[in-house]
Length: 92
Image 1 (cartoon, rainbow, N blue to C red):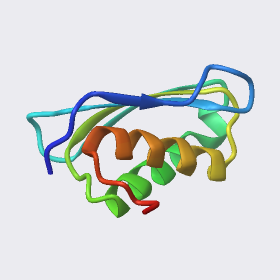
Image 2: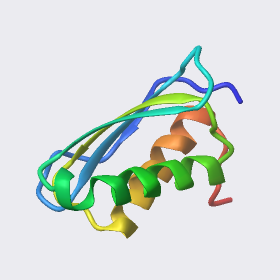
Image 3: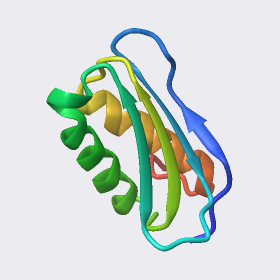
Image 4: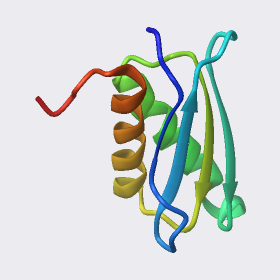
C-alpha cells in the first residue's frame, strides 16, 4: 500500500503524537519516545503495530512521542494518521 507522510495527535499530557512515513524496508519500524517507556513501551508499540496492520499498512517508518496516552487514544491517533497517510477513509 502506498502511503505519504502524515501525522496526528499532540504533545499534550495524556496524548500521543504519531508520524507515519513511507519506508523502503519491509515491516513497521516504530521509534517510540515515552516517559513511561519502561513500564508500557512494549504495549504501546503493540497497539501501534496492530492498529496499522488493521488499516493495511505493513511497511512504514513510525515515530511516536507519547505523553501518557491510554490505549484507546493511541488507537485513535494511529488510525487518524493512517487515514491521512493512505487517503482511505475507514469511517465512511
